[in-house]
Length: 69
Image (tube, rainbow, N blue to C red):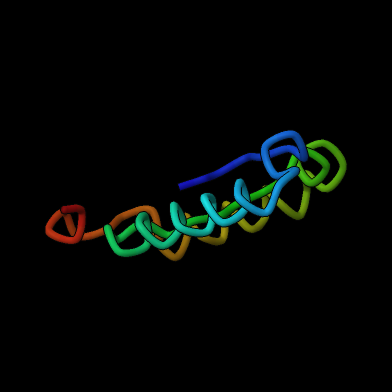
């Protein structure tokens, strides 16, 4: 799962804690979470794209359906 966030969504500690809790929930459901911020998408795209393609090559996007409960 890709999460793309900007500063506006993380300007408070409460918002950040919420994101961390959400990542844990997704992980428990069998997802691999990659969280990127706006700056990375705009200015570091070659690295981001390489990471995503590496995850796909490792088949991290394919999880056992039983894990998604």
